[in-house]
Structure formats: C-alpha cells, structure tokens
Image (tube, rainbow, N blue to C red):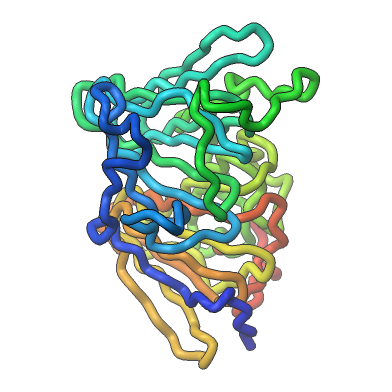
Length: 315
Ligand SMILES: [Fe+2]
C-alpha cells in the first residue's frame, strides 16, 4: 500500500510547448552576445514573470536557448550546477580560482559538466544553429546568481577546490549499465542506464560500470530502453524524481493517493515530476530505442520500494 507523502503537489506533467520562455532572465540578456531564452521546468524567482512550472524543492532545472555566438556571462551560484547540451554545441568556460585564468571545454550533444559552487562560469553557443543547453541546480529554492564584478559570491577554498575539468562527462564515454536493477533481466525490463552522476538507488550497486562522477547534490542518468520496455511501478520514499524524454515518446504511469492509476504520454522535452511516496514507472512507447533523462533530487538514494518483488531475478 502506497503512502502518499507529497509536499502538497501531486505528480505533475510539464509540457515543453507550454513553458513561457524568459528572454530577460538578467539585464545582460538584452545585450548582443548574451541573448538567451530560459525555459524553466522547476525553480526561478518567485517574484518575476514568467514563473517556472514548479517552484522547486530539492533541485531546479530548465533549458536555455541561445542563438549562435550568444550565451551567459560569468556568474556563480552557491550550489552545484550541471550543464548538458541537448542540441548544438556549446563552450562552457570558467575562472580557475588557483591562477585566475579562464579555462574552457567544448561540449557536444548530451555531453555534460558539473560546476562546483562558487566558481565563476559562463557558456556560449559555438554552433551555427540555435542551441539548447540544459541545466540542473542543486537547490530548488531560488537564489539570484552572482555575476562577475557584482560581489564575492561563495568563497572557493583552494585546498578543497574541485577542478571543473575533472567534472566533464561525455555521452560516448559514459557506459550503459544494463545491470543496475534485478528486473532489467526481464525482456520487458531491458534497460541501459548511462549514470552521469551518482548512484540511482539500485539494489545491484557494484555490478556493471560505475557512475562517471561520484555523488553530489543530485544524481542523474540517461536511461535507454527498447520499444515497450521500461521501469515497473516503484517509489523512492526518500527523494523527488523527474523524467524527461530526450528521444522517442515515453509513457509515464503512476498511482495516486486513492489508488487510482494514471498515465501520460510525454514527447521529447516534456517532463513528469513525481514526489516521494508515489508509485511510478515508465516505458518507451516510440518506434525505436529511446532516451529518457532521469533526475533524482538527492545523492545516495536508497533502493526503490517496488510495487512487486523482483528480488528473485538474477542478472
Ligand atoms: Fe525511479
């Protein structure tokens, strides 16, 4: 029996096409070179329109559309920030606090970088087409970014400094782990999980390739399933979770507090957000292998609480 422990917000679908882009996220967005539109799924200033679809608890996320040559100037946050390219090519740059030099990395589709708190960072679309850069913030509650020259921001300690260059995950180098969960041995459960950051709460940790980056403020993966296969009903009693198709259509399904079943079909860049205490699952309902981005709001998740027992299955 599922106990509903949501934060007063039930499982929610956010359609990409219904998000109002914010073309004035900061004053610089009006300047040539910094034009960009922010599409916020979760988190953002509560006092400013357009508001994000959801207010934000454990994490915030969204997509930035930047025309060629445009992007965000140097700024910092007091929490972890991940960038992942969803379309096009971007340069992410930052000031190395050890020598004051600006360093950078070029990212292609589904490549990601995790920026530690406090480091001054920015990005620019280096492609020929409009580009889309996805971000996740390690805190749901809104805090305005600190732009370079505006103030101190969060201090970066030299001795505990994490070099952003060590925090790059390339899609092609992030192996698919087909053995994270018992039920992935079922034909309808075949599921390769590219674990960018952190353990996603499997019962079979230590089997198959490990996550590319160690645990942080949140965990995320790209989950790849063949048509008709997916994850069965399960709950994460300790954290919130979101699903965003990157490729193919995906059906998400869940059970509400009354025990009624629901489902919704998501296209690319639509999002389903589920609070702790809800039995939820998904399957690929497109016509070929698909990619589903899954975010968990805390590192170090416990194994899922399943609707059915799969522990007898061997991988
Ligand atoms: Fe899950």
